[in-house]
Image (tube, rainbow, N blue to C red):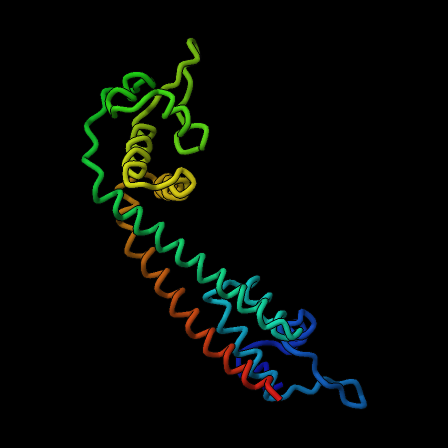
Length: 224
């Protein structure tokens, strides 16, 4: 099948795409064989171009919407995906700004408790408890007293949250940033990944442009 060979796909994959609504329904010969047209080639190119920028699930939903004639639904899905990319860019910018403005961490002399840490930052202990409830800080508990114990990593998280709050960020905006720091294993490793993070966002943006162009070509091909 030429349609499959052009993209290095199996004929079964093409049938699966049609069955999933990614491709429009094909005409059948008298013997029951599917007949694919240039319109199907446009649809397949559009779908494969949408996947890198929007992900398989969203790309599938976009194509399904177009094929059922719900173009506005498809455009809304694209808008939402672009909105997510913009949020991711803002997250990256916030991390970069917070790390740039974060003063060097002083050498810690062991663990600390909520009162001394709050005094050091000029905030109330209740604020630290609020951040803990929001999942931004995860102090352990002293097994004897039950008091919160902040280790070096906890102090790092607290200081980063404090910096971001001073920058006007809401707690729900800070949560993904702290998650990035934790998954990277700290601030220093995260700094080294920022360039790659930016490159991935740029690649996603370029992929969205390519997907938009091929989807537009498919929409034009669908017009009577």
